[in-house]
Length: 202
Image (cartoon, rainbow, N blue to C red; front, side):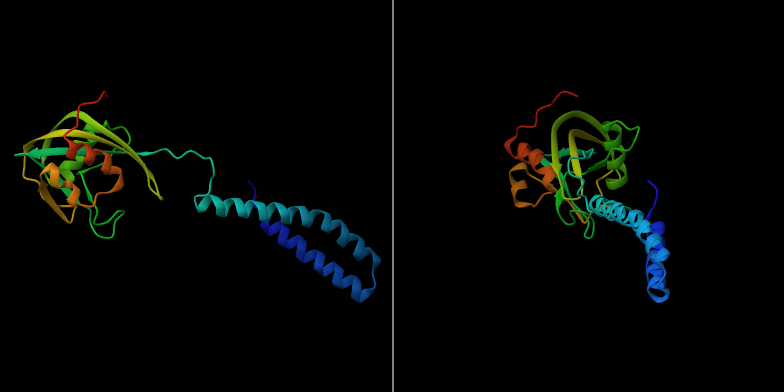
């Protein structure tokens, strides 16, 4: 859409000059020209005001009914001797210091399984085999909507290390209630506490 702001300001300034000139010189023609210019300036000013208001609303996330595509994120359920690995998010990032099941965002062109294997290698330094999907969660944060897919994973190589987290812990399912998790993880964590993570269809 064209930017009418500079033209509107210029026409308004010209109108003021013509009116002032007409007052000083007593020139009737100046008044007539000013009146004609006002017919353009006033509607243009209204358009500029409404356009700016819509732009501010969109910038603040006030787009009303505009649908926001959820961000696809994966989580891995890595178990050892009856415990589940959980990770604490770093301070200063979104949802900092909350706990989560390790994983990460699915990049364009990736399958969720490939994304999860990549993320666990980058974040924990481990190679895993991604198994069945055992849960799905959809959560709308103030800044983004997340669709979380949880998979069972089997450790193949490496020892989990907190390269991108504050800390890691192996926790018994019944003890998960003692940790504050990111909201998107809660449905999956709840299933783990109840022992109800069953494979779901892909």
